[in-house]
Image (cartoon, rainbow over all chains, first blue to last red):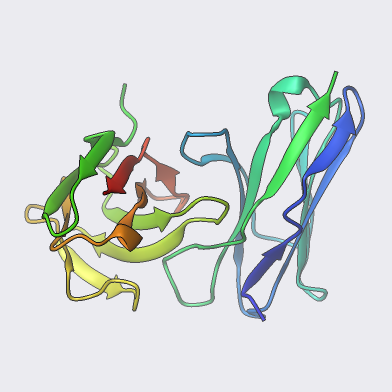
Amino acid sequence: QKEVEQNSGPLSVPEGAIASLNCTYSDRVSQSFFWYRQYSGKSPELIMSIYSNGDKEDGRFTAQLNKASQYVSLLIRDSQPSDSATYLCAIRPGGAQKLVFGQGTRLTINP
Amino acid sequence: DTGVSQDPRHKITKRGQNVTFRCDPISEHNRLYWYRQTLGQGPEFLTYFQNEAQLEKSRLLSDRFSAERPKGSFSTLEIQRTEQGDSAMYLCASTGQLNEQFFGPGTRLTVL
């Protein structure tokens, strides 16, 4: 079992709709969770971090964490074509400084 | 621009040659990380430094790879005797007090 699993997609969402991206992880003691956005040919850009169970909202983005289910998600409201990118889920395993990434979900927003 | 910088941005080399990449972290960030990313995959951890000390190395970091951060500021990653399988994007990241990692633009390596 991979440490961090994401559906690789592609996920297609109409403009203006809600895009929902999901991630599961295997390390039960992980405390830190991150979402990065990566445009083609570019490096990952941090968009959200979440450390506690529940929801965290930042503009059009909401991260949701459920440690009991080992599940973290990212919702993008009012999706825009500029949101089309690969979204990477990352965890910091317990006691570690490194990040472990999923393979990413490719999201396409259709005008 | 006070973000993480990397040099060069692109490197094309022939198999068997040595290459060296440089990373300048965000100033005052004491932790610096190297990752490697291949097409269609997420970044994979290679190594990290706290100040000048290299505290963790991945099993991915074979004997041909070496990293340094001699004065606790910039870091270099050297690959000796490059192989075609080394072709990838090499990413550097740094963290400050919040422990959030910010990535540089990466160095894309192509080994012919």
